[in-house]
Amino acid sequence: MEVEALGPGDDEKVVRAAHLFDDPVDAAAVRAYLADPRHHLLVASVDHTSAGFVTAIELLHPDKERPEMFIYELGVDERFRRRGVATALLERLFELTRDDERRGYTLEVRVSNDSAIKLYERLGFEARGIRRGYYTDNREDALIMWRDARPS
Image 1 (spheres, rainbow, N blue to C red):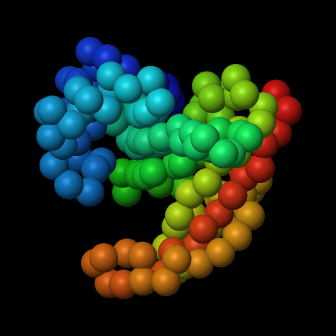
Image 2: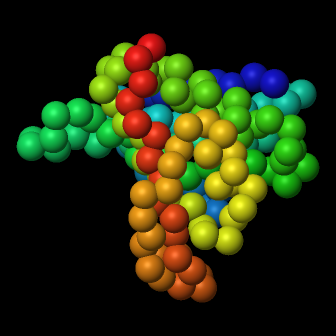
Image 3: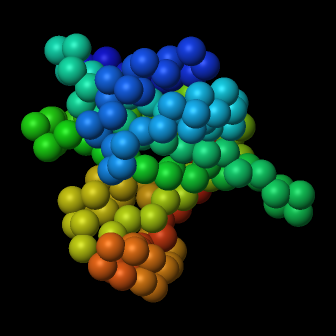
């Protein structure tokens, strides 16, 4: 398995991984996302086939001492689930963003997604709250999870 961090000029690689996203990818949005150094998009490939991706956004705020990394979306093609793709993507993201040991990580996950919750817990995330009715498709609640900063 190969995990690649994408950046400016990697638009075609996103298009090749488009089947992994919930909605069709937009060329202008892809270009803008990849051009912003605070945005992270990693794609995992198995035998030259896009198997999964993770997107994350670095958040800064004037009155907060430490930066946060919001893991926006993690998706793995059904054919490649339970093969370590999600773990590899997240571990690579942590490796690439550990430049500031004060950084915390946060994400939201459907309260019904037991396998994802267990994965996040194995990687050091803890439940910190609930966002009621967060998901627009069925108004399901989201579990807010945090992974506190760790020394590199």
